[in-house]
Length: 237
Image (cartoon, rainbow, N blue to C red; front, side, top):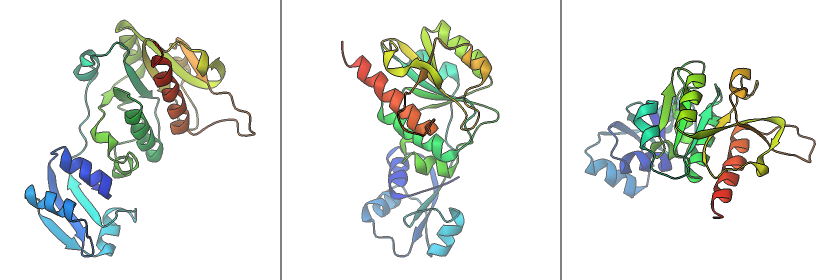
């Protein structure tokens, strides 16, 4: 896959990921990135902006594009049992479709201490170059877990002492929930919200009270607000 943008490129180079090839604008002037590419013996192809635009579907690439292996994903058993914290936090995405939402949630989750993100194998957004770019490279610092069934995974999380917090309108005030426990926060699909079957499995269904005329928030914004509250609640011991 292609990844692009200075911040994303630095994350890949700093993480020692395999970089197959670099495509660099003839006007690119970031000597630090060029030196890192050379130190790792990455083949550099100097290209014009038209060629870089084609590789990134005219996205803002900042003059640097890498060809890399696909982002590694994990199984439940590779990650969840090995999280060594008193209060664990995972985010589950219920068939999210927008790559920008996915990338933004990854970035916010990493910034707010989430231990892993869980996505289903089917009917869900793929990990694309847009997702990587929108995450600003944070995807290299937080494990993405793929699972065959969200319902089965919720049941496994319950057995591992997680409380399940869903999200929907007109339900439990998100500021009143007890977050001093391991939490799985579920974010629903952009259009349909959470599936009925998952809602039935929740210990709480968090709602964000709003005073404006807008009756719902973007999925990544809602996720960030609740994650910030979880972090704040746990800071008062």
